[in-house]
Image (cartoon, rainbow, N blue to C red; front, side, top):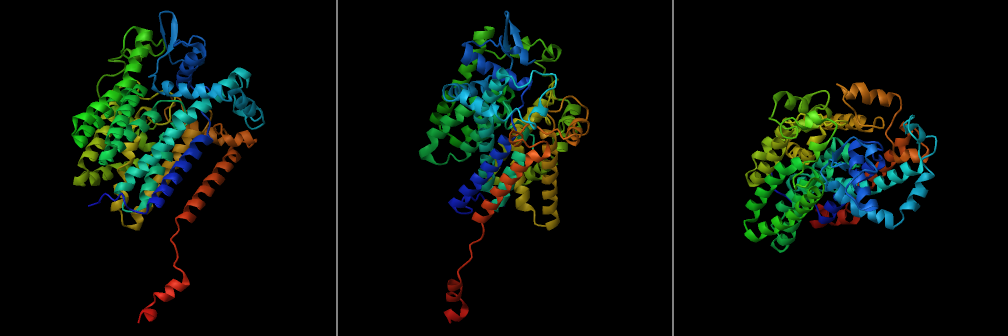
Length: 505
């Protein structure tokens, strides 16, 4: 049986690995700029702009850049769960108060070069001042509300896996594979709600797990409640996982005071959402989608597109060529044997049940939706909040794999997943649409034409694939530094002589 080994490796080694995971993920996430004309992103950013710049919840001045809006009582509103926009509002205020125009002026010198201009819509208005202001502000708030939480989520996956891994590099591999070889990568630097809610859910799970430290239990309980409430108002379907983690917390703590504290802090985000909905729709319930003019037939199917789990949709979510998770990230199939070995760890039975619930409930929920494809998307994007829970059991596969050929197989699956996720994520300036087989019909043709997603390399006037060279150099540098710092220490010649059998005779 695998033993919890939170003490594996020195504290400095664990800290070094955490920083390595964080920096690798953050560099990769920030290198690719947020999608400029994405309806989902714009709907949330419109709310941020409306609240701060116009002191209103209505997006009447901005709705023309998105189709994801609700129309009610003569005004336009974002139809999205408001959590990610609420999180972005303070950072947009900071942006406006401290150097927003200066940052725009700085960026303007880079976005009109020969590398960046071809990435723009030929039928668009070009890089006019209004568009540039919007894009720079979007990039700034996305850094804090998506990219940073996503990189921190990778660290949490590492730290959780590290407690159960028999070797430290197993945990590092699990964290990096999750962050770079699943659809989490595509959404890590975009103002969706998926990655932020995943961070909040998994963060709450991690805090409950480590809450054995009695002196920190009240703080942990307060944070757990706040994170679960935040996840719920960021992506409504996460209510299923929130409930599972809530039951897990009650079981672990077994103290009414801690449960009440978590409940109180968890209500704070919910009260904010209730007030938001009531101010717009005269009901505290999240009914925005019922007033969306587009796709109204789907929104009015069943309960806001939800009916009952369907086997054919479940298959498409897992193995379909359009959105199949395991087709895009085949290494995640290792979670199946991983869950088997996880279940055999009797001391970790509560953690296993939470993980199993998070994965199975989310799969069944999304197989009930008439909108399971997720619009323009990389893989089944609605499943993203449960991905860290699905990736975590892979650490047990590492623990139980001894044969060299099996380890090579694991490496091959992770490499294939990395390749396909990056091909689909960085091809073109939009995520794949509704092509039956987007990898073949959209992503690969875009890359063959040299159409690479906007990135920081292009701001250095590097076109197409050469624009990825600075990223490769940065990652190489991080790997070299990490390997140098973690190299086995060599005993000195003097020490070796002193401790030789001859010296001791």
